[in-house]
Amino acid sequence: LCCSCDCLSSQLRSFIEKTMMKYCLFLLFINVCLSSAFIFGASREQLKKEIIDLSRSVDRGLSATPEQDAHILSLFEKLEKMNPTRKTLKSDLVNAVWSLEYTTSAVILGKGGVGKRVGPVLQKIDTKSLRAENSEVVDYFGIKVPTKVTAELSPQNDRLTNVQFKRFSFGPLGFDAPEKFKGYLDITYLDKDLRLTRGDRGNIFVLTRT
Image (cartoon, rainbow, N blue to C red; front, side, top):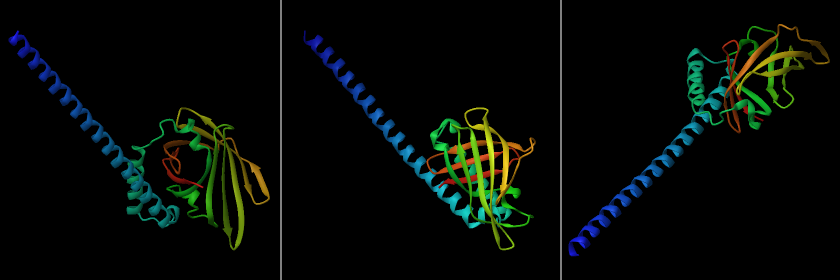
């Protein structure tokens, strides 16, 4: 009987030890996960602040040096890997008016053209009506002219949509866009206040919610 009690006691101790070990490992796992989530979140917010601050310091890219462009691209790619929204085009977060903070597109920046962009460059996206609208004000020799481009969206998957431009407006004048005026938007990062997008010509876009 005593032997049986000793055996039972030994089994009980072994069970308790194994249970405690599993409990400690579980607590360690939870702690590591929480710590990683905190570090990841903090890192993402730091990268967001850095890319927005740098974008604004180079006038949306108009005055950026090659080194600054390369640094912004590096931040852009790091944030893409941290994208918190898996299906960006299907998220309600994408439906908003967005302000352009930076782009590599010479056309949108107006490089080499007549007139200077003044004020914000805005893009409104509505995936429910499959419509988009770009608007800005351009200063032509002291005369400020509001311009607008409307487009239709044709989603191809959960994050990429084809864009068919429909109409261009310059002040009171407007005309329909030729059929060949088209492109696409690949929304590679999206959260409540930042959107990163790649265009069909290899350009990148950094936008903040207004």
